[in-house]
Image (cartoon, rainbow, N blue to C red; front, side, top):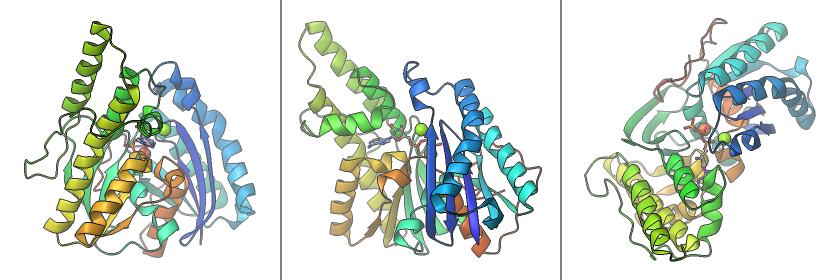
Length: 339
Ligand code: ATP
Ligand code: MG
Ligand code: FE
């Protein structure tokens, strides 16, 4: 069956077309440039941008895939979590498409979709897998017995998400929003052990994370330099901050695999695009005998293919479609895979 996936939880209007685990189109329109001057996503601006981008993006995805509306067998949409007004645009559009085409509707979880998307690249997810989900709004370790029905949270951040920390530190360093990719790039010219930044919850025995102390430590370090009139070594600070984040993330991901005796680790979400995270995870998984899966960067950041991928998984699993009156749920928990 051909599944149309619609994603509007933040500032990307994403439309994907997936048949089984085959990716046919992944078309993304982003309003990120409209938010850049505010240093963060402005919800009202995002909602309006989704409204304007929806129809053209769906039409472009169909063209990209070389299919027609009448070929679509099911519609999947992000039901949550995310910005309420932004989600609402996608959910309303998906209901209209499903009703108009006379096909079932699946309201799916954005976070579970960040996990499910990897199947488009690396095939069926081993059952169970451990997933490290690291994005702009979330940072969690998950036990995933079955991404279509059963996702268990093992730990998560007690304050900032990893992506949020990247974005805030980028701001401190005068790098543009969203900061993650800019820190990644700046760090290539610096040394990860130039500055010994603190690693929150490093040895606390939990599978939780904490990044706000690190973010504050970087801000203090940079301020002290600026007060003293000494130039800030941006590349070294970026690399040292990044090293602190990915050190903790990969350490706890490996601990989770050991603790639950799981041999397969998947990393998903926007921060999974980070080159140092990918490299260190590869190194540590190899040493620990863990098989690692990380989707290509274009599938890590928000997109419609991930929603279509999870929708296709639900269709294949014979899950009942959603009702046509499902709400958008801005705080949908990661444990609720679909509605
Ligand atoms: P959530 O998925 O929690 O709802 P979101 O959808 O806004 O949040 P994603 O699109 O999944 O977030 O991820 C965006 C985040 O990923 C941003 O914080 C961004 O800075 C970060 N990011 C993107 N690329 C990189 C990179 N190369 N290195 C580090 N961080 C990155
Ligand atoms: Mg975004
Ligand atoms: Fe996301």
